[in-house]
Image 1 (cartoon, helix red, strand yellow):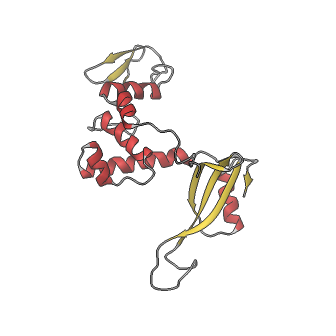
Image 2 (tube, helix red, strand yellow):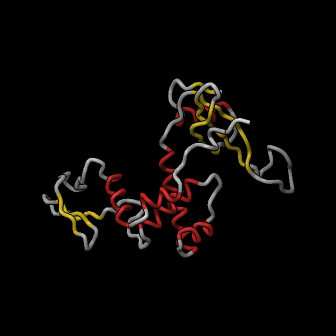
Image 3 (cartoon, helix red, strand yellow):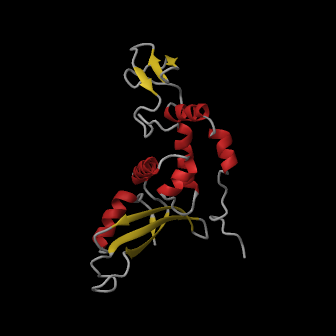
Length: 209
């Protein structure tokens, strides 16, 4: 049997990850280049020259003297957790095929359960917001389903405890391999509801199956 290309696609191994992001300095450098890919830009006046205040891990603009923390305005703002643990949490949450519980995350990065729970939910919220604005395009497959287990009362698709949602996949190539996917709750499976979703989440010209 041929290997499943999606299942066996290349990923970043843990040793490689630690080689790139194993120290606080490496994480700060990576975050700096992600935030300012073309070099520092003062958020107050737009000036590009600055000096670094290493004791506070801040950058001071030469023009307006505004001081900016590297983590201000990011998910890491005001955190007491080292960036190495944040980066490792991101790695563990995004590299696993199955969900990572807060308890597993606690053990994996060495923080308290409450801290792990807050970190996990912050990161998942950021991932949700990042993907929300992206539209799928090309060949699109849509299917409907319900979520909700068996309970007493009316059985089947119309049961009160079952929530309707649609699963939408952007596919590619002759084998229609899935590239990106969206799950969206809907009030029902009427054409008007699907049309509303399509207008906000699919690129014009997409082929829907």
